[in-house]
Amino acid sequence: MTKEEKQKFKTLIDQEIVSLSKEAESIRESLYPERGDGPSDKVAHLSFKLDQSIHIQRYEEATKRLNRLRHAYLKIDTKEYGVCQECEEDIALERLQLMPESIYCVACMNELGL
Ligand SMILES: [Zn+2]
Image 1 (spheres, rainbow, N blue to C red):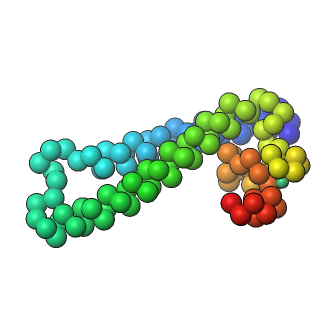
Image 2: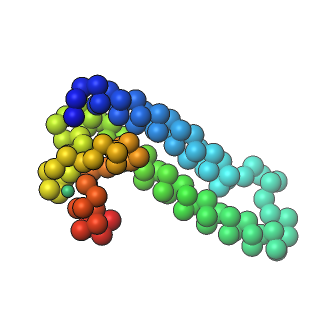
């Protein structure tokens, strides 16, 4: 990977972190509504519970991805970035473009069942 490519991915990861942090923050806000904003009756309470579990799931996914992105960001200036942790082959640039936090190539990811 060239220096320019790394720089490009660094910017990409940085942007992803910013937008994902915002998303996680807004999910977190809907998880803890202001007092008085809570469900008013039983039916509302049920749908509120359901929404909560969806929000919790989305929040967990967002924070997990954030951690992976931050990890990738820290590693971008090392030789490890863009190299599969399993087979040590280069990860396809097209894949990194979509998921800059990737640590496995497509073949290994399938192999590992991830
Ligand atoms: Zn691999």
